[in-house]
Amino acid sequence: MKFFIDTASLKDIQEAQDLGILDGVTTNPSLMAKEGISGKNNIMRHYKAICDIVDGDVSAEVIATTFEEMIAEGEELAEIDEQIVVKIPMIKDGIKAIKYFSERGIKTNCTLVFSAGQALLAAKAGATYVSPFVGRLDDISSDGMILIEDIRTIYDNYGFETQILAASVRHPLHILQCAKIGSDVMTGPLSAIMALLNHPLTDSGLAKFLADHAKANAK
Ligand code: E4P
Image (tube, rainbow, N blue to C red):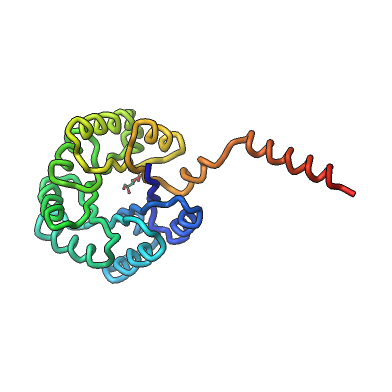
């Protein structure tokens, strides 16, 4: 399973990259705003800075909501770097835009997906990635992982090449559940990725090993 980090923080992206396990980055307008990035030129420069840190795909979301405007904005975003994936919302014009870009070899990520039917449409349009938001479904007492399972089944039934990018991942259990189901990618915050490191038996075991070594090697 590929690990993407869901942030616009260059510091967090660099930290995940330095760990050696990072496959890509997803951003959204809220995450860009959280980092204080505004204005078209600054936003474009920030995407370039992200691409310079990571080797993999970097999702850059369009703000436009009409077909023509999404095409214009998406083409500009795709020009920034070959790593850029144009992130497009799951709306009617978004599906048309995904089809347009897929026919021209530009990678897309269909975002704000909350149902298997939406994921089926995104795959039919040729999306590179589909982003079901598991955490936001959990937030409204609906099991986000059931959606990942349903999409996995549908895509496998027909051999769709669209990759399932489990988004809105909030904690390490989400990551494990995605891996068990067979999600192609997960995207989450640095905290969820780093939490996979932790186990109290690792900490106590290491402390004991070091203490025994120190005792045996004391003068
Ligand atoms: C998806 O690509 C979104 O950027 C993101 O995962 C949303 O996560 P949130 O629900 O924690 O805001």
